[in-house]
Image 1: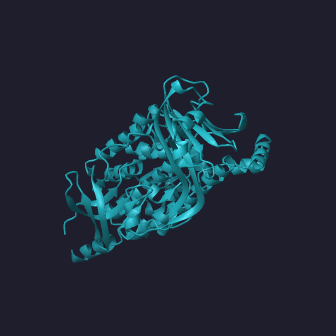
Image 2 (image 1 turned 60 degrees about the vertical axis):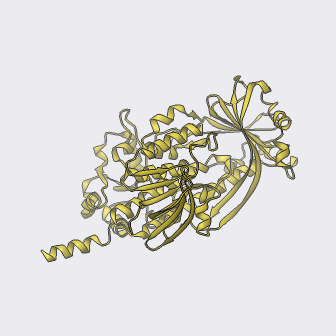
Image 3 (image 1 turned 90 degrees about the vertical axis):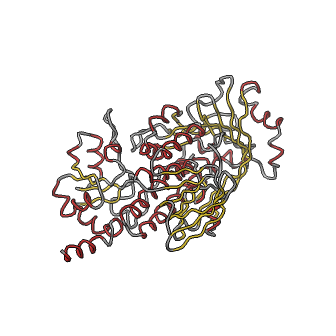
Length: 508
């Protein structure tokens, strides 16, 4: 039976757009099914880190988006009187060669990502189209959809990826349960357009007010927009706190009423959740469908973009290059533990901020002012490495460096491919041609790059050869490429190709 596409991506938010765009760049045929007519007109996500920016660079729209962002300099923790308790820098150099942390206005951000995906010739975007049912089997998947004309139709694809949000119909159709990581809190979220600039507002950093009477935070999301989030207290009625006089009272400590216009007002429950499974046969999930993160690190969307970057190249290798479907099992194996570590870090920091007991809050403030090692450890966050696995070997699991010589970035030179980087050609052994021919890797000696930062990074690996995956994570390193190749070739190559070529040669 004729299929309509290789992959159906359900949901066209930032994660779905990134996934569709990355797949489209490799020539994978994608149908995007999105129930809404256009971009959601209000901001929801507001922060992206260097890993997300690096993936956006691969889509080709970094230089469009980056000038519109607000670079985050730091996170300030303040006490109830807005006196500094602790300062966490956020503007240090990142291994990606990009700003470590920026804030953005999501409607513009999403529109740019969508355009990048839709402009790929192999990507077919179906807006105002809703998935009604989903069934899958060994041969593929069938989706029943409702079209803009209110008709129903069927789509036949090989693979489905649900990027359809926290209430994911794809996840529900596959009967995938969520595991609660023991964090559920209600917060009032206010997005404001600032009409009169206020010196009281942080314009290049985030402030989190550790006030036991009501913890809250403020974030700049563009040049003239600000987000406030106020924790609801135990037993507080969400509808009550949304009343105009309550909202105005909460904001009075920051600015007068005529200084702002409310663009969004909503009560959200911040969760720490992760799906029990991320794959069910021909169906996978990503983004909020697979995990939900409290906002204290700004890592919710970032985690979803990392899902897309991890999954895109693996799907492409299965679809375009005949790699075994077992390659897709490494998606959940790598991404789920990584996401849990990020969620737990956000929960840990959230619990420091959200202490409601006045005595415990006073002790916390004392320790923060004393810069105690215990509190520093509790507030610290570094992006975890990927756990060791089939595609994370010795020396692997961390991000590779990206360099910029002022004319080009190293990721742009390599492209959406593997990078095999060696100290000497001898370290490549017998398998260099396999990587170049079978995997289409960029194979180079570190000396080919007149790039001191790249050379220093390579030296820190303590190896003669390093293999970097298309998602910019290090697969592994060592003294000889052959050992790495022997460990991963079964997952990356067309397992039947060698046999077919042998049969063809024998026939000749």
